[in-house]
Length: 177
Image (cartoon, rainbow, N blue to C red):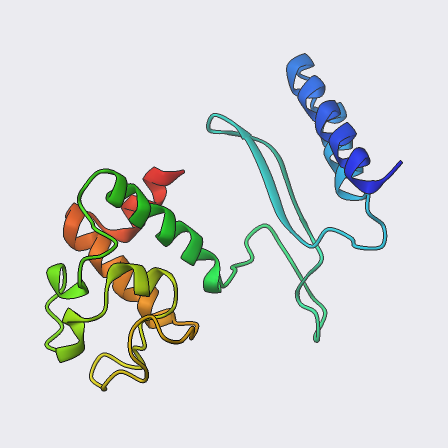
């Protein structure tokens, strides 16, 4: 059976086991689903909860592959660029709500003191086409002319979100989920 079918079968077993309340069967089903792709073993932490009650928790693989430090349930992860999708979703929610405009210059939301803040639009930050190298520096390129992956652009989007909602980024991200 192809690996995607095995995973789906594992998840179906998981749902059935959750319904019948058998913790042993549930644990066995999840373990089987996680092991269903032998050429690419699961490496990470998985937790399943029913409300506030944890019904399954497992860590597998390595926190550091070079030094073979094993993952544990208390291992900490660097989220890196994973929050960009969250930030983009939150910005687009504010666009839908009418609180942010994709075509508004970022100076409409932030006081940066940079002359380019009136030329760089929200959509440029979202699309990595702002041309911003650093807040205090001139633009590297004109907005919308060049793609250049930008962590700073997403930091600015987070600041815009906090400004227009009067809520912390952490609160907004938590509410998204």
